Length: 335
Image (cartoon, rainbow, N blue to C red; front, side, top):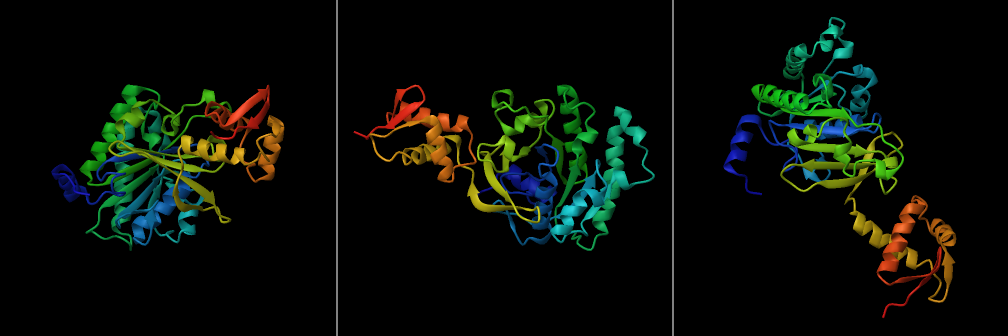
């Protein structure tokens, strides 16, 4: 990829992009998801890649970086520290407000003081980064704020979010660092029609979050997805979004098989083909319940009735399945 003059100038100032074509250097990116969805696990995995240069992030080669973690909502040993230890990076530079006995939490009640709180916290963290045994002054620096919403007075107010994220970006640029912050998503209802269609829009707060951040990321729990597995999505402003299906290993860490998540259209097409194979011949007529039973026997047991109905409706529309009567279908031989 040929970089533009503006891109080259930015990299000379802030170092290489943490994730090329996805997460720009000197910018602010957001990772959202429900509590306990796996944000800390994802971040620990990424930190290992940035600190060691020994692995890729969803297939993308990433540069070595100086990395520090600012924790606001949990003690280090009860939060990010657990996952960093599992990736053998427990010595990563970090600072936790929860562990600072001298920190006055009442300051966060006064919204006008939050930028000063962040400035002081960043100063402490940058000191930890520069004195870390991993520090290399020739590398760019990335700071992870978990959670960054601590420093946004009202995430549901467009103006507050716009001003706060603009201020965060300026603060990061003044320190010549890139910033990656986490935020929680809103509570999710069971009915898909009562959810926002895009994952990134489920982050709790104003649309200004996605509008002002450089890149939005989201980790969806199995209950939110079509495939019954965790899905990670990144959605840069200047590149197409991508989704990756994750599996959880026995030790709780994520793994990825190297494939992107298929689109809904691809999933529907593949599922529809599988349903056609459940009919013994063109003369057999099957009730929906029987189709579902055969699908479960065939190993398609992680899908719900609504999904099966969508597949069936697709086949009927394409003329490959005929509705004999209500809830009863037969296969149609292609002409």
